[in-house]
Image 1: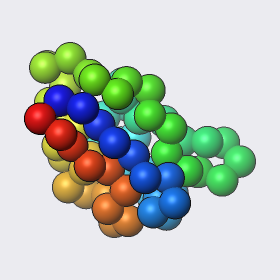
Image 2 (image 1 turned 90 degrees about the horizontal axis):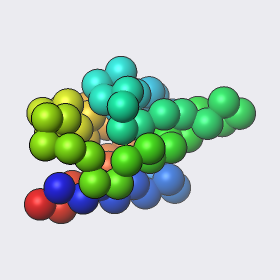
Image 3 (image 1 turned 180 degrees about the vertical axis):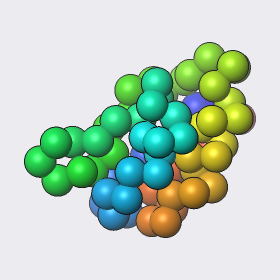
Image 4 (image 1 turned 60 degrees about the vertical axis):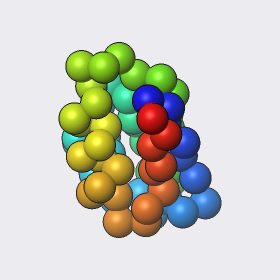
Length: 64
């Protein structure tokens, strides 16, 4: 799986970080998402899919 983050769509809600903290972080200044792992390990798939589904700005896309 490959993760694509569109920072301009991010509204800094932090749902991604709560769902997958090994894959996402937030900028301390504005809260915008920071992608830590573009191609996370398979054991994180469920967490990443949840993060994408919960993102209110639809800033996270997944390619399989």
